[in-house]
Amino acid sequence: MVEKVLKTPDNNNQVRRSTQVKYLIQRLTYDGFVGHHYAYMVRVIQEVEPTCFEQAVKNPKWDNAMDEKMATLDANGTWELVALPKNKKAIGWKWVYKVKHNVNGSVSRYKARLVAKGYAQTYGIDYEETYSPVAKMTIVRTIIALGATKGWSLHQMDVNNLFFHGDLQEEVYMEQPLRYVDQTRPDLVCRLKTNLYGLKQAPRAWSNKIGQYLVTSGFQTFNVDFSIYVKKTDHGIVVIIIYVDDLIITGDSDGDIFDFKKLLKQKFEMKDLGELCYFLGIEVI
Image (cartoon, rainbow, N blue to C red; front, side):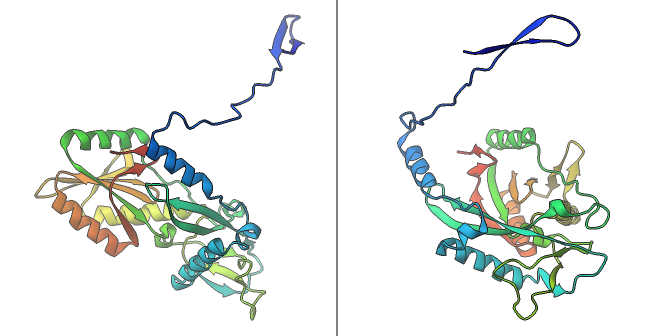
């Protein structure tokens, strides 16, 4: 071990600081895992996610995933091609890739997401407020514990194309994504008509949208956590926890839960994941 002896500027007291390099474990052993967890980990590490567009475009699986995403963006009318105004600037874009796995570790789908480079936005011009509440882990654990104690069923829903549902108030321009540039109008830019992942105001717009809908549907929120909503019905209560695009729905009336899940799917593009299994790193059995 090598040590450096330093002197503080205000006195002559010597301070010893170790410069020994501490290495992490170089090898991972699976001996401590049970069979199905071992199988899950083996399947997960077999798939490598691309780190850039140039890598993904060479792989048919990711190439198809990008095509599907662009088809969805076109179907939702995410932008229109316009000439960039003189007093405006167009922000860039990037692709983010994620392998989605099933509970047993098998591949569910290859997900490609087009993200706007929101870090290039200018406050007061491209966006205003950005604050968006998310559920506190203490609240999540408390509701799960309450459901276990009361014998409530716990359900999970996932919002598809989350930020499409938020209303975009500002004028935001983005460059046309490479490989999907309109060859007849290559000099034009995308004027966003709906929110896109990466925009600074996107989480707030979505939070306001679903919050307003829940309040008008009879739910109440609380100062302790603005991401938890509770509704009293003739049969009991329904509790909803929101963490960005993940929702936990529970309560003492399965009928009311079923009815409201149906309403959510009609209002927003949501996927019903059934009984709660995984949420923010917590496995629920």
